[in-house]
Length: 211
Length: 340
Image 1 (cartoon, chains in turn yellow, purple):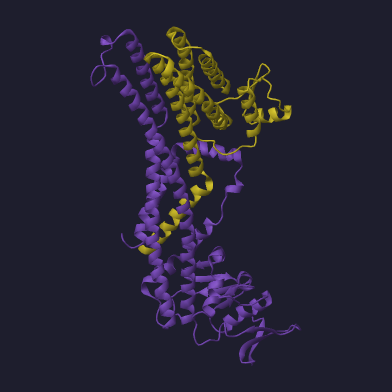
Image 2 (tube, each protein chain N blue to C red; image 1 turned 120 degrees about the vertical axis):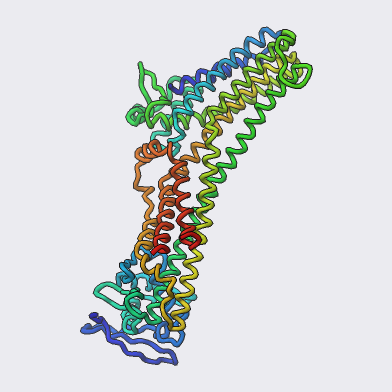
């Protein structure tokens, strides 16, 4: 799985929401439903991808890596619709060597499920997607408000479920990032050693009381 | 012991000084205040000197084996030079500190064996004088202080973990609310309470029903992806750390009692307290453990190795931590003497 799978699905949602926002009226239920179905299908795809990705990353790899900037630039360029991330060849090569990027047929891809580099990539992508989702949620909220005034109950429900799906997706990412941070903190060597060592001290005291 | 100095005490302007002449050296005599040692009351005088040598920062330099041990003379000199006690500078130079260390030996407060300053002698092997008892009390005090520092760090870690638990719990509530709202919308489609039979609904209502049903199932799938048990695991870990802290504090109280009793025995020139003998037996390994904690390896681990380590550890991270803290709680409780 690559970051582009997520980004393409997000683009589909964004495009459908923009088209829905540009409609003059929501009284033509058939047209609204088609657009909504397209958006919902893409959101479902994202959720499915996220489910696989969240399970695959095992919530680790939260700490900063040297090649983060390069991967972030590639992700930002893809989200902005640019194929060329405008990076030095050496930077790309370094990220490829570190298993952070993959080059296929002249295209730079961001892997999400294979190797330790991919684990770190997921966290960077999740952060970027969360920002993008915030914008999509704002648009979906506007859609729902208009549908509440201008559309039938069916249209209102259609956009309410779209909005709610996006919010649930954002919470999934939020929670995944929170968990990642927790695991990072709890497995951070210093903290882990501290707890282990305090355990040993207590054990030593015990030996004393049993002596 | 090979002495480096010969001593003479002199009173100058009403204050007693020790004048040290370097044996076989042509250097100038070195003068230090004698009242740090030659005092009727050991409290707040040479007790402060010993505390300065046996402070938590120096604990990794202390070596004790079978109730006998001390610190390298050089380390003791460095600890004393420029140090203050109750706002007073003990000695201002390393030369003066070296004189003071040897004068402590002259006064039988410590012994010097080669390059070692022997502070601790085994009370099981010989009857200890007040000075030797006070040295042990100083060590207990340093150990307590060191444990306090570690407890503070564990408490900080617990606080950070608790923040995570709070955040996850709020997010969990939002998810449940979302499912509940969707269920309510489905129920509202029908004429009464409960989920309506889709066959009884109009075409448009049935389409709404289908959208809401799909949405409900979607939300459930999202929930599955959220590793529902994670909050519980993290909460359990935090609880166990909390219990470990409480029990370590109880153990620390026991040390406090040993310290007070030993110090009192020193002041009254009585025998080494029976209950504190176990401290002596185990002081060496305890100090090693405390000293080991000061050495963080965080900076020595390359990020890539660190990431690999996290990957390997992740699955058991919370469980391992829970096990560590459970063990900690158990042993600390025993240490406090509540469980033997």
